Length: 249
Image 1 (cartoon, rainbow, N blue to C red):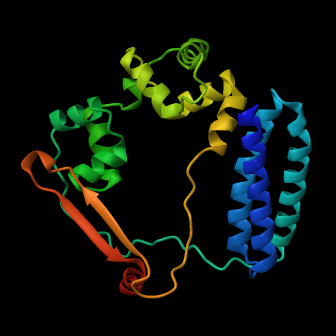
Image 2: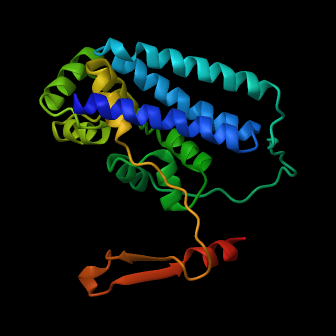
């Protein structure tokens, strides 16, 4: 019941925080959109909790009512940011990049996605897409073809007795068993196996905090990097948040 009470407290905190922001700040389309995204996630997890704890049905009604109010407010506002499609100004382009088949096969076997491969090779995503198509290499074909029922049984065995296991840990466990499954399929399977456990893990996730400093030198950050420790090299960075913000601006 501690996890249930923790979810209730987290949901209450989120709702109070959103209401406070909407009342104290200048309401614009961006703020409404951010609030709706947060409430959508909260509503989804609250409904998952309802599958095991019906007492959360009232919470779902409150969230739906708040979302309706924000959506009505959003319709009366104009968006602050406009999005425009990019247009090609010339038909000429750079020479084609030549990427070997062996290199692509190695990266695909290592589990890299298309965008990650493009970042490593330092080319665009479309170049990798064309190269994979020309060589007949399929990233989707590397995944396991087990059915959803078989996947649910495996996930149920893995998470039995430990409801804190998330999709990354379950995905790694499946891979150790010889099943390479897409991340989305693992997430969907966790929801089918135990929706309430997914909701309780969500309420304990780490959230990015926003804070302000009183002035220069009032708060300093220190960060260490030990990736080169094998060569007896360590890197330490120290910087002041206020000065860093001014440099970025």
